[in-house]
Image 1 (cartoon, rainbow, N blue to C red):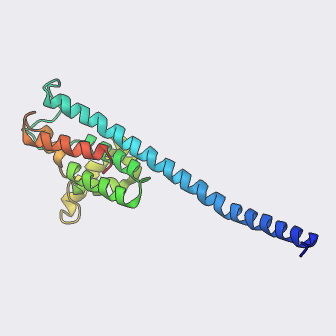
Image 2: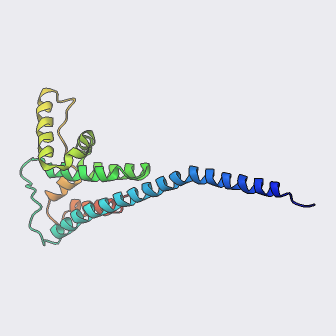
Image 3: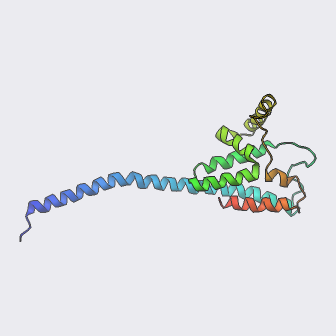
Length: 186
């Protein structure tokens, strides 16, 4: 049986049309997946870098290569740097997938406390500025005086607790382990 020329041309045209439609539909999807993958990788690298710097400082503190981490154990002060660092971690974690984002958030709650993480989430990436962080803490303290049940103070997590202890303390060791896990974004 001979193949008709028109049948061959129609078949080739239909195949080309189907291929063009598939490419038109799939190309943005593939490009979007590649972009999301690049964003996730970038977020993990940012978290890795930030946690690595903090981990390095804590290890130096533990090895007595650093005399202090600017935490006075006698005074009950909250450090606005904690809000700045926590906010930077949360901003980076926004690009992660749902599961990793929840794991990073859980680790941040352990490191900085639930109230601090909530405060950073509420204000978004504006908390990366030290002046804004100071204003947020002062505003929260003012609101706490008016309505203590609704507006709680930013709390102190493992970072603050450990850095108020001696370098050999178990809290510093726990902090190093927790920061190591955060560095791996898990």
